[in-house]
Image 1: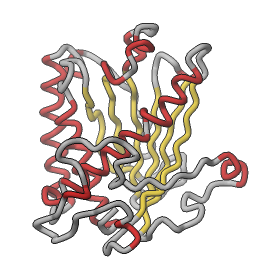
Image 2 (image 1 turned 120 degrees about the horizontal axis):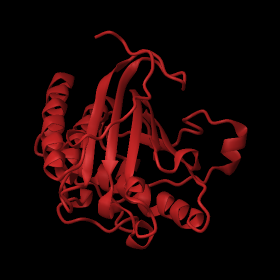
Image 3 (image 1 turned 90 degrees about the vertical axis):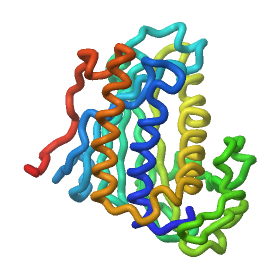
Length: 270
């Protein structure tokens, strides 16, 4: 990506909040992303240093393929996200209350100021390394995922920073530059659906959103460039209020009497 890790840290937080605003109620009044918790933590079960803990609920609606959604109860279409951000290290876990231990997905990420050449950036053990299917994704390459109108890095030039356009292969010479090293783990133990869901999760389910998210991060550079962490926290708080109101109007969310149990541990008293 054409930014420093420090810039990316703020840009990522901005993008998550903006996506929550834009996606909630976009295609369906009962579909969106609600932030339940956003607070500092001191320790977690992954042995990560102190950072920021967030807990979200995704009301998936039309995001699941229709032929699969038709076979499943409504509670299946609610996904919980628990995320620990100790930048440059992040861990995100996804769970579904209906499926319980039959479903598990996590995304482990390390952000480094390099061009993608670091071996085993997430310090995986030998067993996991042996199973790993490694890929390098250039978000400016339209062969990966079809470009959305207005979000083509190869046509974008930042007015604030002077960076761009970012044509395929830009990361080989760009300055600044950084890499997001992601490890996706997915388990779905449901007869007849396991192979379909796991294939969808590793392709359309995760790959496409990763690419789309980072293309927008680049093309919205002039929106987040120059922001401080205080600006981000204010924006996140405003977003949480807006999203709760949208979901409540659609009969969804905590405003509609939905509840969640926090998975964070040993929070600091701030």
